Length: 330
Ligand code: SF4
Image 1 (cartoon, rainbow, N blue to C red):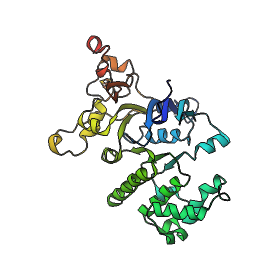
Image 2: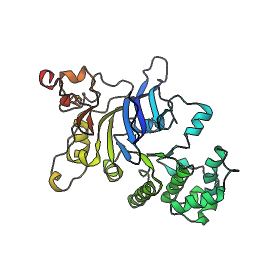
Image 3: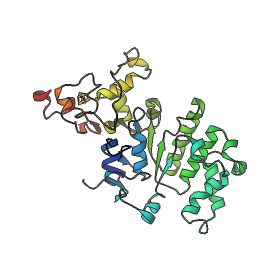
Image 4: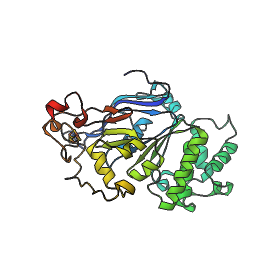
């Protein structure tokens, strides 16, 4: 693959994450199945798709909480897919994660001070810097007070817990943060506050986000570009405005038709997909979406479509937009 341009912070190059089946005969689960894309410096790259489509697995592989089965992941030009030991630990300073459920991701036996001190202990930075001053700075950044330092997670509200999760992710001054359904477990009013906070922090600290959500509305609110995932594959990538105006992939069309619209789009009928999402341990041949696609043709069950640019910056994996063969085969 060609060297990534300077404005690319992370490049995923044919990344696969397969999990072994429960026994030797069981098929492996293809959670992420040959995915390639770039995350540009300073952008929010949103990823949307139904539960189980592989978006969280992809997010965890990007920061090496999971090891990819195949492929390369470049962070600042260096391939991190095969890193181990001290090199992997060093890489973690540059890329962090905010988890979905703040109650589950914070240790209930540790105070906020202990939780926020942990990253500096793990990276043996405690003796080299004023950790207390940095913790106070982090609390201030996420809108909490010093009295929260002595609290345990069960003494905090859901929004406060997620603010601690955000502060912990910021502790080592990363460049990239994976937001894995970071607001899904929160009440709607708190969701808006946390989304605003993430936006403010992004601008203030020049962060880059990989923002995972099953909720297209949330993804639209925060993203500069959006990737749509279906059964382990990215099927469409575009600027959020372009995707809203014109989507090409039949799955994106169906996803968008499911959210309430205003203006010109209001009154459009919801597209109901037939059947269930197939199992990632046995995805359909050809285009993974062909068993549910209202526009499928013979070629779709035989050949997997590649992600191709159909307009500048707008990529789609669908044979309908393969201009090389469209007239003769479809
Ligand atoms: Fe539908 Fe075929 Fe396009 Fe897949 S390749 S989305 S099955 S038309």
